[in-house]
Amino acid sequence: MAEVIIVHSKNDATKLAANIFVDVVRQKPNAVWGLATGSTPVMMYKHIANIVANDKIDISQVQGFALDEYVGLPKGHPESYTNFISKNVIKQIGLNPRKVHLPSGDMKYLATSGDDYEVKIKAAGGVDVQILGVGTDGHIGFNEPGSSLASRTRIKTLTEQTREDNSRFFNSIDEVPIHCITQGIGTIMDARHIVLLAFGENKSDAIVKAVEGSVTAASPASAIQLHPHVTIIVDDAAASKLRYRSYYKWAYLNKPKWQGI
Image (cartoon, rainbow, N blue to C red; front, side, top):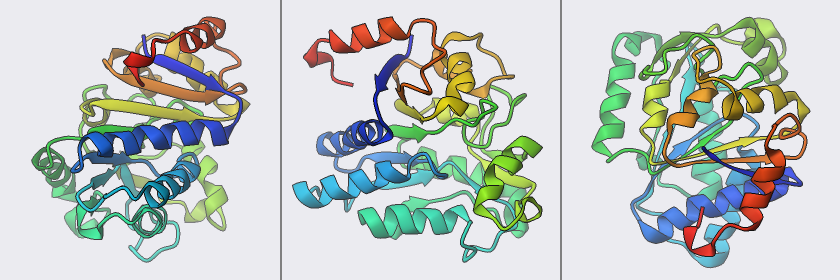
């Protein structure tokens, strides 16, 4: 069973997640971070930046691999994930831009960009800790419902629900790309530690299916049940439909300190 940590606020959740990421670097200076985009991890990246600055953590050797990128958006587009990572990770936290990687959404390289990205992740030694959000339909990365649980980095067609959810970042849904390139579920599951964040009642259905439902391609996030080291950090609203939420709170309250997170 994945470890479920229920906290009162998004700030508490993202601060806890930030400490997990920084602790990995304290133990392994050349750690490899798996980087999510979207609104969920933004506050976590701010907390990481504060900890790194205040504690004078050397992050010069840290590598980062983003989960996904839209297909067809120019790198300079304000809603490209290249721009997101540049703003929230490279500039804010201070990671070396040469050590931060994204899958290419350039139309010229789509035939090989997925395989090329897999090679880069393997060459880096694999991801030590991966941050994830979860979509209202249960997607992780851009692995929409129906995605193979063994999938690798590849091109995917976004659902209308995902495009609608992401349209708040664009002027209209018509501007949201239809295709993306994303790490596959199998790729994500190769990370040594997965940290999944979710906030708000609108994520409660996705969370209960991911944590307590059947493991199925219909709910891509449910694949995390098969991972040996998963930490799910949610607020009370996102946890509201969990059948065993009282136990999760009890278990975390009484967790031996030597176990860590």
